[in-house]
Amino acid sequence: MFMKTSRMILGGLAGLLSVIGGIALLWGSQDAMLVLIHWLGEEWALGKHNVIRRPDGSTLVTNPTSMAKWMSIIWVIGASQIVAGASLLFRCGWRPRKPSVS
Image (cartoon, rainbow, N blue to C red; front, side, top):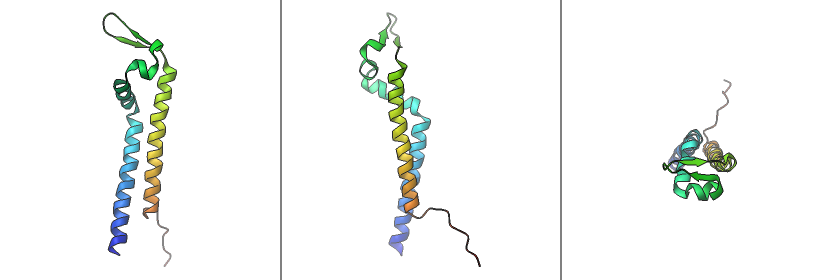
């Protein structure tokens, strides 16, 4: 009985944290995109011909299609994390109970 209860609580907690993490990833996907571009570099992530370096040190990015490609990857990861967490919550018994008829 104790093992079943602790497994249900720990699994439910992991599922809940996974859902919250997926929502946070979707919510902050623009920031995740900026971090990804910073890590990879603008030229590699968006294509060398799509990045214009100006003499004053600023950068112009001219290809929204490749940015949308990277954003869609981030959205798919966030959505799959939400689905995985929700299925874990469902498997651990955190589903709505039908009211018992007395």
